[in-house]
Every structure is written in structure tokens, then in C-alpha cells.
Length: 209
Ligand code: GAR
Figure 1 (cartoon, protein in one colour):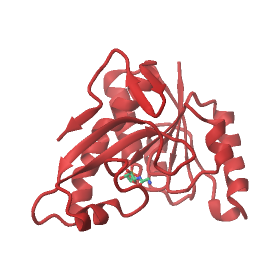
Figure 2 (cartoon, rainbow, N blue to C red):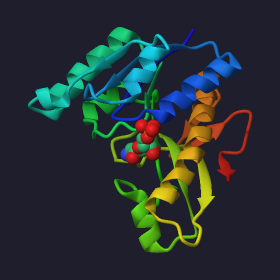
Figure 3 (spheres, rainbow, N blue to C red):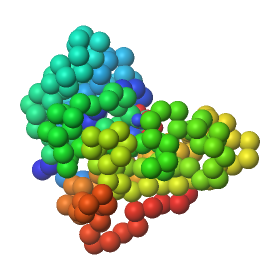
């Protein structure tokens, strides 16, 4: 049975959506562990409530990114991950870490990449006046928020939206696409061709909500 290790920094609602979908649909998968970069991350409580091993590796206790990433890599390898899922993990990862997990490291980003990489995506979408916003699940490569896109969900930007209302609409969309992308990966349906991801057999890689 394939094993997933999830990295979080906070609330962990995407992780929760993946676990609940796996439970509801009876996926043959082992949630081998959840690791947060600080012990106050709320998502660790959900993991424990499900009997999923939960760990904190405090990034503040490491003098360098390299040292933190080495500790993280060692723990993930100990847990035995076929897939590493970044679910609201708010640390930039070093090239060595990314290379080590290349092809089995995925992330969700709250924007329709390549638009709005980085932080504060909802504020920036509102400032830019876009009429459509959303979320993307992608393989992680060394460029931040640049890897091959597995699937995206788009939501409308509505009159009167503020960053919170838009974030809530996008988050609901994230909870739909992240479990779907993880399942595609587990089922061996993803092929990376250049900077594109093909799903085989084909299925829409865009959800419009
Ligand atoms: C999500 O909106 C996710 O897309 C975002 O953090 C939130 C985590 O929520 N990730 C990033 O911004 C990554 N750069 P969650 O902890 O409830 O899943």
C-alpha cells in the first residue's frame, strides 16, 4: 500500500480533506505521518485524532535552511513516503530537498498559476481586478510555485469580495482538487511531459466552480 507523508504549517484543512476523501472512498493508502514546522500547527491535532503519527520539527531550532531540510528529509525517509504532500507548508525548500523527492513531491497553491506565485494571492488578485481566481496543484520543482500543473480549480471573483471571502471560496475549491490530484498520483495516472502533466486516461484537469 502506498504511503503519504504530509507537511503542514497551520490549520491543515487540505490535509483533512484528503484524509476524509480517502476514508469515504476507501483508498488503499497509508497516511504514514504528518510533519509541521512548529508544534502549534492545528492540523497536528486532527492527525492525532485519526491515529496518524504527528510530528513537529521546529524550524526555529535550526540555524540554516539546509539543516532544517536535512532533518525533515530524514524524518520523511524514516516514515517511508511514496508521495510527499505539501498542504499549506509555508517554508521555502532547499534545492537538495526538492531533488531528493523530485516526482513525488506535490503542492497546492491558492492561485491559478502561473498567475500570483508567492504570498498574499487573494489580495493581489483583488488588486489586479481579475474576474477569475482559483487554486493549483503542481509538482514541486526548484522555482517557487513553478512546477508542472496537475490540476486547477477556478472560482469567480464576485462584486463586494474581500480577501477573506475570496479565500474562503478558493479554499472550498482546494478541498476538491487536492484529493483528486493525490488519487491520480496514487493510481499512477500522471505523466510529466516537459512542463506539462498528462492524466491517463484523460480527465479534465480544470474544475470550474
Ligand atoms: C491553503 O490555502 C494553501 O493553498 C495555502 O495555505 C493554505 C493552507 O490551508 N498554501 C500556500 O499559500 C503555499 N504557498 P490549510 O492549512 O487549511 O490547508
